Image (cartoon, rainbow, N blue to C red; front, side, top):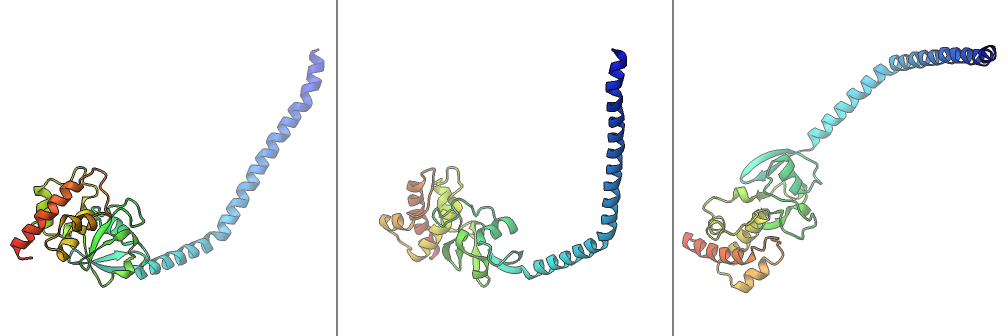
Length: 216
């Protein structure tokens, strides 16, 4: 029985030894081939990387633009076709400008562009290179809208309020003594999930009175 098993296992051992040698040879061959390829192509890859770096730098230089935000000139590295919303948030750090719908339906991203309330999610930066852009930080602390919003305790979570306040500021600059129906129509297209619209209406009436006292 033992003699029979030796006859069976002997070819297997021989095959196993040959397999190990073949695998070692294969690994060495692959390693040599890889080293040759690396040596042959190392310099072209380096040159290519340098060329790509130069191209990238040139592209970045071409994307430098200047925006006027809250009364200051601010250099920005951004594509001209980038929505203003993302430049304000990601490049300049004005996170009060909120992203919600992205299709100009909710009003959370509203900013003032040359005094007019506009949805920054659909305005591209190349449209506002010569404009004055105002976020909620750009309204003075004693602005009637800010004072009224605090007085009437309008916000609940506050997420939507910067855009709503800027839309209110634009509206009140054009309608200094609005009726309830005018306020309803002007603010109908902004969304507050907390349901602060009754307080918004109260604050807008107060802001109108404060503006009148300040002389407009």
